[in-house]
Length: 436
Image (cartoon, rainbow, N blue to C red; front, side, top):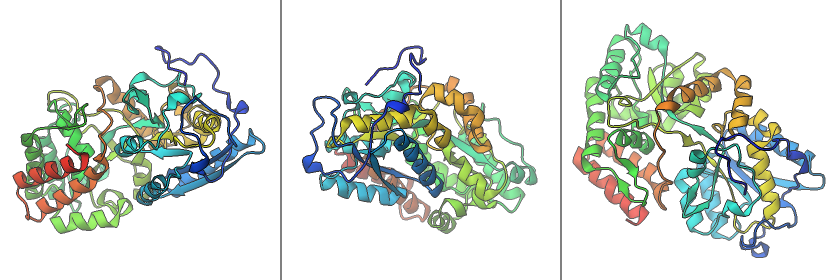
């Protein structure tokens, strides 16, 4: 795997797709190699798995077609899926020693699958990384190896419907100065000034948003050593914020929050025009705006300039990984290289999998981005100078934290647990999940 150069400028043309050779068919793990000995030529057959929406499935198939057009005689077996069913299927596949050759990965699960010896260290493959920054690459590295190469980067933002805010007679916050207390005041004022709720409260159960909150205090969700990295006091403050927001009317009553969560993103208050704000990743803007039918404004989360340090960071939207048991390492490397570096791939992918990790391609496709992706790109560009180093790859077992956080949140909302009990429950359950 070719390393990035310090300047981030590629030393070669990105139009290497024409010399690729790859293909696909179901992986027979028992016949595959063990991942050692460098990139090996095999039968040129690859299983390719990813999750996403129908538009992502459609353009990813077009990328596959473009790749195969330059590699006569090869085939790829695509396996698109929805997010939840993807992980169920992948777990079964890996348990059966039949992992897909090339696959999307998420930071919550990257270390888990590497620990299961399911992923190939990507140093073994011939992939050009000369246009990917070291800080971006680090998000897929641990134990001295690269197990995932970021597809692109995104960041948390507070998405705000300016029309609702204006109708409520409330001023838009200054996101370079506001605190979490200001967020409470803002959402409560919006709720009181009109028919829409200030914020749905859905994202307050997101452990990644809590991580932003903890990082603002000089702490983190996880340490580099893979243990929990925040104090009880910090999580107590988070849960108390939830209760205070609800008491002030900034977020709805508990049963409504549960109802919104069950309905899904497209039926959330922000998407349906009945809520003024919600926290999302920047690559989710398009889906929300499409349903809403009007433009949103992106703000930094509260506390970015009132805490010890900024909590925001550039997150790898997802990763490309390869199976250790792939029957053709060379073909797997070529496919990942094509996905990361080719014009054909990025012209179709644009910012859907985050702003491209390849910074040369990122600059090239910026004028091509649709308005919603351009909105996210502009936000990322604006916040980047103020960001600190991103968090370490989460520990094995951390994939359970999202469900644990949601369960604890619901107990708090319905009064079956106090603030302190909610914190203790989260810590105990996550420590069990990560083996701490």
